[in-house]
Length: 338
Ligand SMILES: NC(=O)c1ccc[n+]([C@@H]2O[C@H](COP(=O)([O-])OP(=O)(O)OC[C@H]3O[C@@H](n4cnc5c(N)ncnc54)[C@H](O)[C@@H]3O)[C@@H](O)[C@H]2O)c1
Image (tube, rainbow, N blue to C red):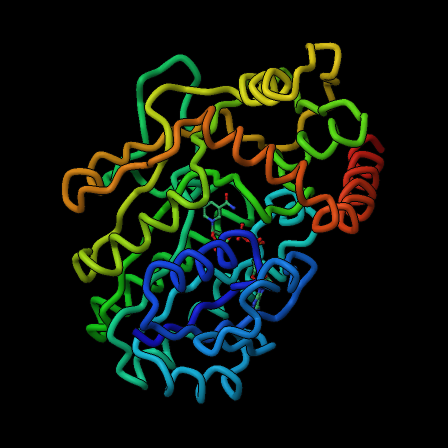
């Protein structure tokens, strides 16, 4: 395969490129990334010189850049997005540009170049939220009910991707995945923020009562789900991807990290909630499991252990990002407490 990966300097994209080149030695990848605040070129420094890999700096909204790249590949795996919910509450417009118009630009040029597979990476947040204390999960029949500008823009992009299948026969697939965690995730995000705070001797902030429930997936397992869909998935089909069977609250995540790092609950600090914070997400991933034989390899605890070990061993990767991440939260809390 010749794959155009978009957003490959971000968290999941960089893990995917490493995963793919390791498991598919014959394939070639072009990585198109705008290098926003969320990108980190260091995440792929180990494969920069690999002859099967090429990096192109550019915006997915820019047809002049995307058009010639699309002509050189047969497959697109589309990760590029503005992806931070907190940022989407403060500055939604860039989310609409990248996530909706950027996705549309890619679809349009994929159609022009007769791309054999356009895989769109999306989120379970398009389904909205579930009440606490229920067994309900997001299924492929759940209605779209996005609650933040981020999830609304991802929902719009999902609809556009499907419309290109129905209207133009573009061979698309979509995965709607739950929260990922693992190596190379910015310390601005929930799990690495907790881990790096503890390494730095700082407490872990918990939004509201901490009883928010999320599904958590180790990033390598997300990569293997996308691999299963690319190799065995049905064109036009959407697959929900998740990592857990039982509910785990944010407080449970924090306590797991504290336990692995040998610390007690005095390292928790409760901070004011964010607006419209969705209560519970839980993903039913039985469809991809039954149809494609995929399931996550890492249990929640194993994934957390691997992640914590990685952050302990790779301070030079995350340290330069930590101050900026904490400044972002400081400003956010100042604005919200006004
Ligand atoms: N992180 C999660 O837990 C999670 C869960 C489900 C789905 N997703 C989806 O997976 C994808 C990747 O998420 P992530 O966490 O790796 O994101 P990220 O924020 O870490 O990385 C996004 C990457 O996209 C690039 N980018 C942003 N705008 C661009 C543009 N206009 N043109 C080209 N490149 C651009 C950034 O520079 C960055 O490298 C997103 O589409 C996200 O919606 C993420």
